[in-house]
Amino acid sequence: MRLKTIIYLLLIMALSIIMLSNEAFCIEGMSYEFIFSKPSINYKKSITSLSYNANTIAVGSIDGNVKLYEFESKKEIKAIIRNSHPVTSITFSPNGNIIAVGLEPGDIILWDANYKERIKTFKGHKSRVNSIKFNKDGSFLVSASDDRLIKIWDMKSGGELRTLSGHTDAVNSIDISEDGKIVVSGSKDGYVKTWDTSSGNRLLNINADSASINSVSISLDGVMIASGSTSGLIKIWDVNSGEEKITLPSQKASITADKGLQFSPDSNILASGQQNGSIVIWDLSSGEIISELKQHKGKINAILITSDGKNLLSTGDDGNINFWRIRVTEILNIALKADYDNWQRGILSLEADVV
Image 1 (tube, one colour):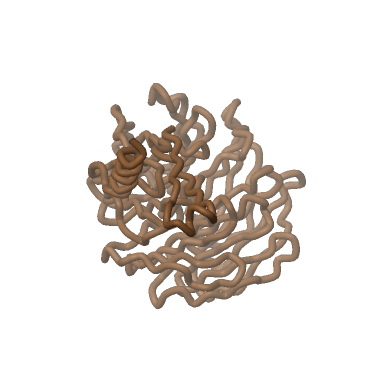
Image 2 (image 1 turned 135 degrees about the horizontal axis):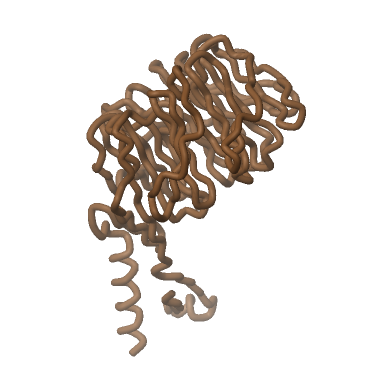
């Protein structure tokens, strides 16, 4: 009986590392399934950026509009801004009350998400705003621009706290660590830099690629930075040392600018948006592709994984917002216990709990 149990458990372990289907796979006993959900939202014009909070999706378009949609029903709530300039980046504040919108000329407009009224405009960048992000408590907003600068804005006073300078070309993407202490930036100059948000001092200066760095992302646990370039190369870096940990095989398709990379909340997988219309899912333990999601017709402009890890959203030049439900299941929780006396006799006892 005991031998049968051991054989059965070993078979389950072997099966748990085999890809289940094109959109379902296992990593270290966890099953990840990406389920395409219909209907999608069709905006009919190129969507440049999107953000999500609670049950609301905000999308910004090349036509200058920002629209809100209800997540579950996919129904439009209201267009909150009409502008002659394209929307380049958009983000909700953590409490969902404010929507920050970056525009082509360099302005950042703050909107009341509930009453759909303009609160204020941040003016400081001299050209296109490429990326904006709130810290976790919403006390400050960080922005990056074609003018090579990164700015930190105080949400209480509405003033500029500090400017981070050091990149020699456009800053395409930024992200903020979960504790709000570090900003990571990726630039057309090929460098990835990290910054102390309190002092404004540069912490790391990584020569990441000879090509433009289009997107950066920092893992929720604050351990890893992902960078993706126009060459299609994705690299994983240690946040503290700047050491290169993993290089993912290039797909020869440029990584989407700004919101082109996203870690899962458990940091096991990385999603990358490609300008060839594909979303690639990577296993960070092996560095291998485990799924490729192909639903868009045209360039991917933004991807995001919701904070609860249950949904992946994507949008692009085709004007569609696509939804994937992420089903994560713990398949097997295995504990190996080697008793010293039994080990001497060459016996290994295996205990397992099936969840």
